Amino acid sequence: MPRLGRPAAFLLLTVHLVLSYSHNFLVEPDDDRLWLYTSGIELGRNSGAELNRRVHDSFSAVGSSASQVTRFGLRERYASNYVGASLVHGTAARLVGSLQAARLSDYPAYLARTMNAGFMSMYGVTCLILLVVVLFASDRRWLLAALLAVSATALLESLFDLAGDQWSGLPTLLPDAETRETFAQNLWPNLPALFINPQIQLSPFGDTPRNHFILLMLPLFLLRWRGHVFGSYLFLAGLAFIHQSHTGLVLGCLVAVDAVLRPWIFRSRTAVVIALVLVMFVGRESLGSVIGIARPIVIVSAALAALVIAACIYWGLRGRMGRAAALLARMRERVEARGPVFADLAMIGIILAVSFPVVAAINAVGTEAQSLYFWTQVHGRALGIFRPALMLGLGLFAVGRLDAARGEQRATKLVYAFAALALVPSTVEALMHNHHPIARFEQEARLLDASVGPSIDWAVIGKHSEAEIYYAIARTLDAGR
Image 1 (cartoon, rainbow, N blue to C red):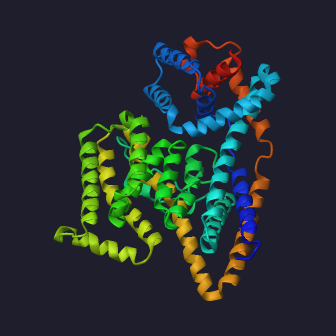
Image 2 (cartoon, rainbow, N blue to C red):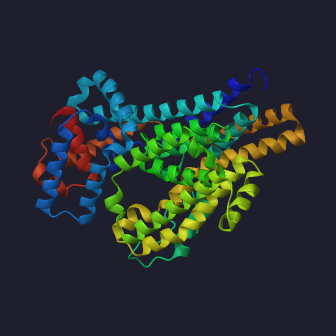
Image 3 (cartoon, rainbow, N blue to C red):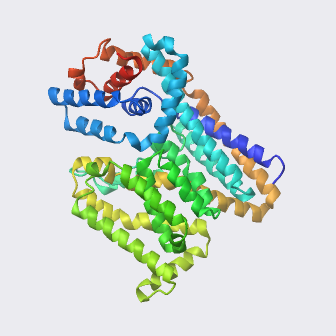
């Protein structure tokens, strides 16, 4: 690669990440982001639990809806799910807050600056991790593939945004339980659109821990496909502090893939890291009671999946497979012959396809809440999570074809040219976006402040919207009123 190759790639990657974030930067005082902010600023405090208790008491007193009580309780138990993101948010809020202490009397203005600082800091940390791994763990081909993956993803997103997002995908691939929706209504256009234009909740350039987790799938699979399987599982262990639930989903899928393709890793130190991530997930995950994990159909399905994985590892380590496992051996040989990228992506596709009818059956016999919070979305979210890996694999394929057709030097120039041209729609989209996010946030926060009132009546706080409840908690934690 030319001397300026890595600096040029670094510059192009950075500009794409910044521009794509600038038109996805949706920080506003909604319930989800205010809750994430409070989870950060209450780290190390005991007052947060007391405020949550007051809210629960108010829910009982005013007769709040079951869905509101469920959502609040879920978030309360989920506080440790994003502990790394919460730490960054809380640290940034404290640093900026110390400079804005005079603004505490005008809390909407204070909150606008501290919250924006927290969200931007977390995205900055995420981008820094991606850039470090991509630039230092890549040779020329992989660096170009990563650049293609990021620039192509940004290009698709900006083009669809400019066209009004007339065709975009949601993660709900199954109909909610106890509704009259059909499979067809959920699969189309959501399934194909998830590959081309997932909405902001599954974008790698958004401002929530889910978005950050998705973006960091690119360096995780780069490590994995460069032969650093142990390092990729260590990386996944770190991601558990960004999004606990998604870590469990990725861990289960990758363990199943490696049970078929790389059973030998379960005799190495990688097995220790896998066990560590699994223990962290089981010990910290709090979604089980909400999604009905103790139902017999879920337990039986999970037990069968674990049995199949254990059998694949056992047969693979023995090296002598019986007739029942001969098909598995032939499948492994065929996919491995095409390299680790194709093998991993093919196995992930097979796992998602095989598990889809099982999840559909579990979803159909569950409650509406269980369906809403997990089962309808598990495959859609999985597609969004693994999409960066697919883009990286396609990028590597494109680089290989360009090298063969044009030669390495010219192929490199073509990739840089594409990445530079892909900046044009992102730039247009960024210029059209709101250029005053703090002012907009402050204006919306003032509306919440007026609704909550100068003195919070915790006895009736349950009558307020979720955003107003979390605003009241944040103001009390920050300003003591």
